[in-house]
Length: 117
Image 1 (cartoon, one colour):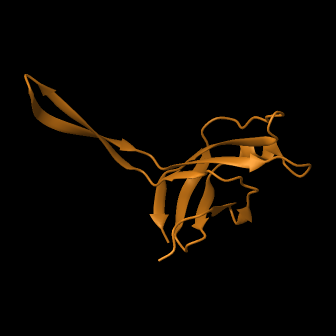
Image 2 (cartoon, rainbow, N blue to C red; image 1 turned 60 degrees about the vertical axis):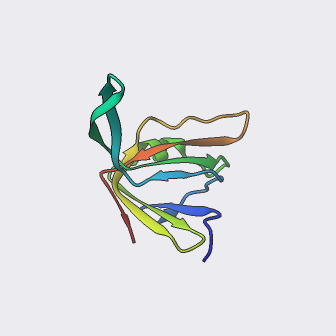
């Protein structure tokens, strides 16, 4: 068995120049316990949409405006151990910004659905 070490991220088939540390949330439910008087009365759950936090290397080919304009994108998260997920109908949650101090940009893609492929 191979442990996840790094991942390639593709947007509509084009590999993004990612730095390490990407975080994929395939979505699901967050749960909250509700209690009082020393006991739990019940739990509630709320749906959480899939998302992908990422950082990109900024070089002369990096087009932050094109990144910000992406909508209805299919994102593929392909790990070096063979684990692969696809997130559909994705877009950036907020516009990406250039960071001159560390030469990177990034953001968070949010999508409608995420599946293991």
